[in-house]
Length: 472
Image 1 (cartoon, helix red, strand yellow):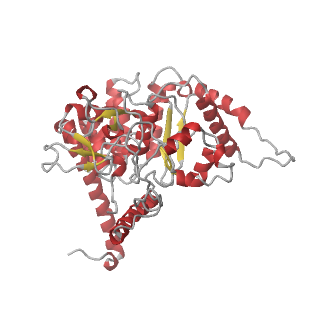
Image 2 (tube, helix red, strand yellow):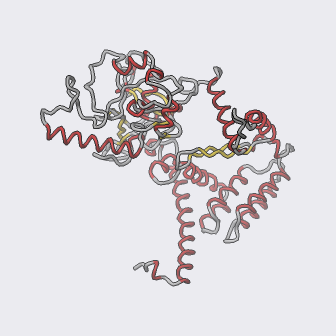
Image 3 (tube, rainbow, N blue to C red):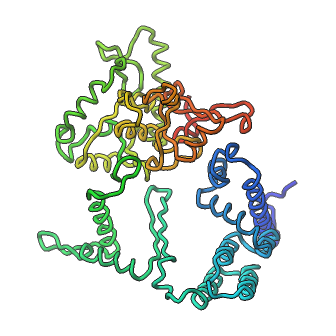
């Protein structure tokens, strides 16, 4: 029977904490070994991903970066038994192992083989035990690279360049870069004229900090790039900012003029009529999702108790969407995710609006269906519905996806919204060349059926953007 923590003495608290920490190290080593075996034995079809990293991210609480790091370790330490032994015995952390493995896989060019083995042994020794410190290990590796690396000084070596972009839990983006001298000079030269303080018209001093001025300047450079005409093509279009928001959340635009200021003929027509010859869609109460009588615009009272239940259930679903921000009730950016209504309205003051008529389940309606290739408007609608690669657990950005015909075009399948799904390159090939299946469910969203080798019961799985708990 496990003793309650509050019952432990001070000595027992210290001893058990140290013991648990050691067991965690051993369990991490065990996970690396398991992942190495999965990498060599389990097929991509059974994983549903190009490798174990995607599978780990989709089935555990690991972040993509952590999962990728585990796979890299699993693959790399197989070639270095001394690193593997230190990890497997729990005397070295996986973070220190990753540092030493990177050095061992790409040693300085002018360091002889004997020197590489000696250096690796010294690094492993310095990384074992409670006295191990990351800073000392990094410093030793840097000295070795500077002494035995290429003749180009580290400050001028572009091979060392790195730029990290991490989305935080609160919806911001943190950048961290390391650039060679020439790239750094280019960046500072571009920022310089844009970072000068600009007093207000009344002479009030610019109170922005230097860091804030640099951030504003960087945003200005991005604006200029996205406004240029020579941008490369990605996803069939030139890179631009896409914002998805409901018309209900966009109508209050007092801060930037009336509604006429932001609508054009195409937008107005799209909101009131179909681009195709499909059957008309019954009006929907935007607050509850309950069917409305076409003449009275009031909820149908033919069967009031049942209508009340349906309206209540729809309201619950709407509350879920409002709370978890799946793109139906707040602004949504394909890369960064939810955006507040106020900022969404600010963006809408200076943009080209494309109206995409959606049903209460967030499914786009009334789009072109005659061409084989997905039109630009259809692609925007697919992005609004799928958000990115729809395969469960994937979710790669929409810009990296392709429109897949569920019923193949060559077999007579139309280019219609209920026959299309966004998939990244890997999952597009997986669907074509394996027993995975995809269909559009009664909620008008994609569902995926795994092969029997993955799930003997072949239970359908919701698309990535629809995964998680949903109110019935």
